[in-house]
Every structure is written in structure tokens, then in C-alpha cells.
Length: 171
Image (tube, rainbow, N blue to C red):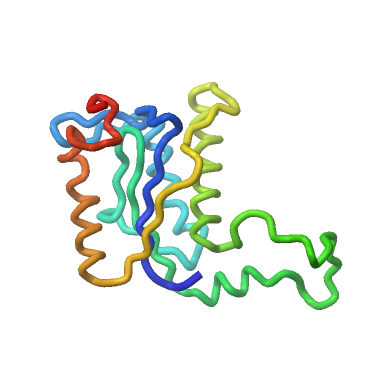
């Protein structure tokens, strides 16, 4: 995992509008959307190598956009060490690793989706129901120009909801 910015988009299962609604260009977040917001920003509280900023995140009715900043790639590298000297391995060394590497964007997104799903399903009384679409969109931010375009996209996303391909009213 390299230090830097990663633009992330995560959609709900079947593009269901779970998080609230857009009214006059403003998001009216419901209780489910509040869970998503809280857990997004909690990510940086529990991971010292992650930074998140309010102006780089938006909750839409059926998806989210945000930028995850990895500030120290050494943390992710040390977290991926397979075992310590003297530790007992329970898996044959030829077995492939399962799931994303600890500290990676894939692991961060997977953990975010897992905890929000549990909290949302508890809130709705729907244990085991899917909340998120499988996978997510990720784009590495490589230039200052790209960062500014992505920030602008996030900041104006609500104003374009009526044109958004994720908007079920536009299907």
C-alpha cells in the first residue's frame, strides 16, 4: 500500500435508496445514512495511518463518494508481516493469503462495509440482509489537478443527482 489519496465509490445493493433523499440539491440523511457517515469518519479514528476530511465525502441516496488518504505506507507494510520469529503457523506456507492485505484500501473498505451492514441491519431489524453492492470503485489520485477535479465532483454531486446514472428516477 502506497501513501497517497484514493477516490472511492461504494454503491448499495441493487442501487436501493437507503440513506435518505435529495431535496432541493441537499441530502436529507436518514438514520441509516447517519450510520454510514459515522462509520466513514470512525475509520480514521481506528486507523492511525488514514486521514479523512469532511469536504472529501458525500452520502448520496444509494452510494457514497470519498477520498481515503493513506499517510504512511510503512504502517501497512509492517501490518502485513506473515508471522513473528517463534510464532506457530497454522497454515501451510504454500496456501495463498485470503482476502485483502491488512491495512490495504480493500481491507479498509471491506471493514467499513461489514460494520455498516451490521449496524444498519440491526437498526432495520433485517439480520443478514445485503446493504452494499459487491466490490467498489477505486481511483488513485496521482496529480493535484485530479485531486481538485475529484473534490469538485464530490462537492457538486448532490446538485447533479437528477442527472446521476445511480438515480433510480432516471432509469
